[in-house]
Length: 135
Image (cartoon, rainbow, N blue to C red; front, top):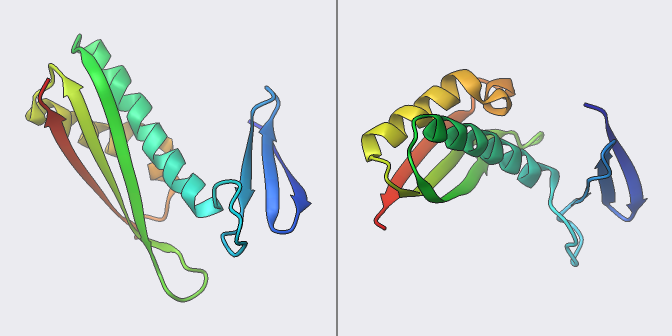
């Protein structure tokens, strides 16, 4: 899983993989944002890891998902290194999924399958919220 980070000027880098995918990463100290900050990418990684596993498990349960959206947010410490103190992932699912089933799948994925969340400092409070949206 090699990733290459290349500095492209100012406080911007481009991350790329061996398949040719790339993403701009930058410090938010610049006035003209052109990409995600590194901490935003951490939230993206956590949310997408959870989302992919949730979809996979719901599909294995033969539940129809019409829409799934994750809102990710984090609270960071004020002092350096400004670590995340908490992360909240809010899942909105539309389909024939009950709230009880969704909450059970979220807990299972968080505890067992999401390698991103399980790689983070256990002191980070990860809160999962969810709502089933009526069709």
